[in-house]
Length: 143
Image (tube, rainbow, N blue to C red; front, side, top):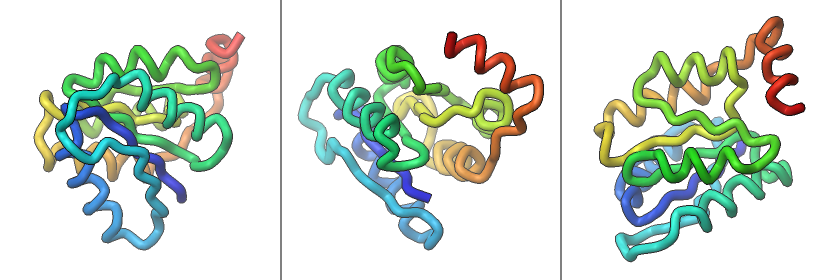
């Protein structure tokens, strides 16, 4: 599975940890869209890069990170066809995939620790959309 990651300056350290964690798993191809340092940037630019790539089918899923996750969540969900889910634990990650078919995971680097973030990412990447009544709801959102 191809996974795109992008984040702003507030999350570059956590993004590095996630990339390192995912590189140990041979089933993932990782695309890093930046940033890779603590220099201040505008998070909407990175949300746009990642969401555009997901919509162009350059990868199946994406992970966006910023300090709280709120800015990336707002920016990502402006794109038709993006279902970005700000998750704080493994349960919300699981539900975002099973019930909402989230194609972008959003994390707040300043609100969760590394171990929690890695657990969320693992669960989110392993879960599938269950469809059924949930597809009907997604169809309503897309209209």
